[in-house]
Amino acid sequence: MRIVRPASMEDAPAIARIVNHWAAQGKMLFRRAEEVERSIRDFVVLQDDGEVTGCGALALYGADLAEVRSLAVLPSVQRGGGGAAIVRHLLAAAVELRVQRVFAFTYVPGFFEKLGFEVVPPETLPQKAWRDCIHCPKRTNCDEIAVLHELPASRP
Image (tube, rainbow, N blue to C red; front, side, top):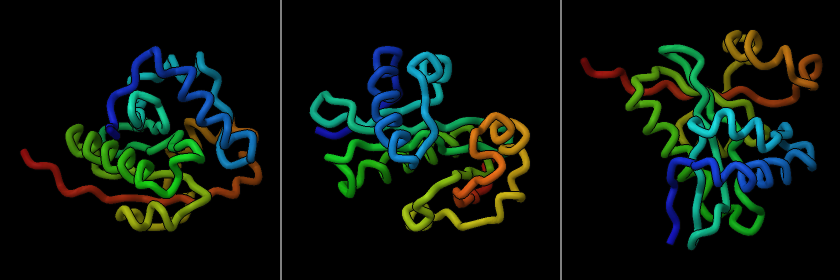
């Protein structure tokens, strides 16, 4: 059975392993297990028959903005809908938090566009640069594409 659930500390090594599989191919940034542990509350995992097969995180940038980050699934479950299930779960969490906009930086904008995101100029997200890009090894030659999802207006 496939589920998306909040990550626990026990999931940190699996999350790091999945992310770093893709990082080794230049598709993501490396994440140490200790780094994942520090932000474990941001993560959800995709679990297939008890095995963690994917992950993603929702990082908050303030009351109106969040990022989908560290989105990855094992190659064996790619194209099976797991990545989309993770993103939908994270978007639902953003709606519950009344976040107005969710963004991602990606090499596969088409995947995100199918989920309601639109490609935007990266400079429309200066919060990302101020907080993260300054520390990124790719900061001077970022080749990722920024995508943004405007969420429904929150109700009082």
